[in-house]
Length: 156
Image (cartoon, rainbow, N blue to C red):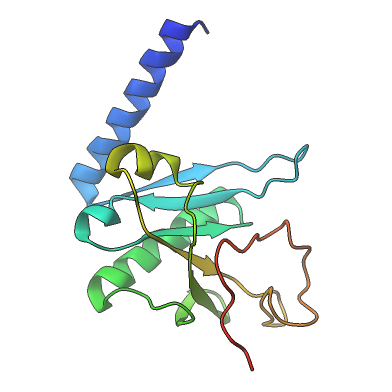
């Protein structure tokens, strides 16, 4: 693919995202992980900024599952209001609640930033099978599986 073909492909992808936002109110962008760099896969919303809400992002899960989760969470947030940092977000996955944390620097949300400029974001953090979160002792996954992009809630 040459530079001109790449530019046209990027423009078409951006237009597709804008069309989805126009039709559904927001869209989801999935990003596959990279085994070589150990970068976690993630998915995030694009379009909640236009509703004066933070975008939502989740790391470390299959992109399809992550997309379903942020879609459900976006619906919940639109119906009930913005998630607060440290808030438990109920039953987006079987058996466990998630916790919302404010993303300090949402640099991974490239498509949202391309459309809206500066964006706010909330990360949905999922527990391990024992219900422990990354900031709790004994969490069952290495840190790179679900990187925390904000400050963990005070658990004292």
